[in-house]
Length: 237
Image 1: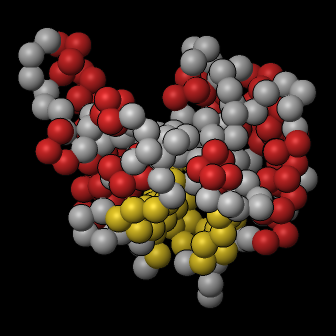
Image 2 (image 1 turned 60 degrees about the vertical axis):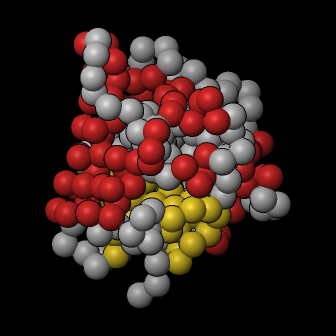
């Protein structure tokens, strides 16, 4: 059975700003079977901003799968924001997975580290080693979750980018802060069929891992740049 996914990211919910969110929940509910949100659910990680999004999602008739983004950590309330989303019934993936209608979804926020020949190594100061190690741990968790799925179809939900191609358009100087190739390895080794992410607002829409896994940057600004009429991309798996 084909499953239609409406994928988006970087909705940045704010108090009093509901137009885009209503278009997202209403349109996705009509066009798809599952709504996927790849992080930055809120603008500053404040519980009241989470409530704005959750009130809109109450009218969305399809399951919602999401992961947190860096903005959701900004105010130090990530645990409370997470609790609110989980309590509401959102499948919030944080080094975890869920199966919906025979399709497996594995999700992590991901982290930085750079791509390909500029991939950072854990060498030198402890702070720098910790920065690199966080990206490695997120990637390993994603691979483990994907491998653990007993479904033929496996969808990865991220915030940070797994490939350089989907951050192209951003200044090269900040590419290392937009994602890491370790996530691409996790997608390949874990047997993912497709991956969705956000974070790179000025990036590019589409790329692939070394192993050929399609990767889509579904950040709302990127979708707008690509000419999508709705703030999501519908993909069938």
